[in-house]
Image (tube, rainbow, N blue to C red; front, side, top):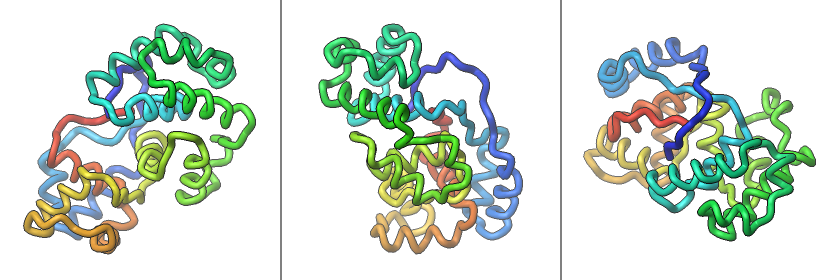
Length: 215
């Protein structure tokens, strides 16, 4: 999901060039895709709360609709921090275009940040799976959303989201003669790209849509 941003500072993973070199050396498909999309890379703007809030906004609606709702929500909230969002009335959040359920999710997310059930300061020392477990405890955040967060916010290098439809399609096209792999087969294939499965995923996504997605 793509959203408008007010911040412009972005960070590229320090491992990107090394990962690209190793993937290209070990896999002709990756070599072709990496060469096809030069000069672009995964980036993050680094705000965990807003990234997760955007993910909630964008669930089950189009990119255009999500853009509109996020713009309204940002204009209304203004101070997009947990301590402020948690004080807002559900009806006021819903008036920005959120469903009542998503408004509840937004407040629950803010509450998790405030009482340290979600604590970004400790993530550096946690495994991917431990972070996923922490995030899916928030209402409205499932495994796929947590994996997107690991990729687009934390830029973890070895995430392989087997439930992602785009990844399934791209692997089918490039490796399995358009035969959509089962989750188990897709998981097994992902081992081929370790320890840089995030980077492989990013280029496989680009093969279906060259637009660079940013959270």
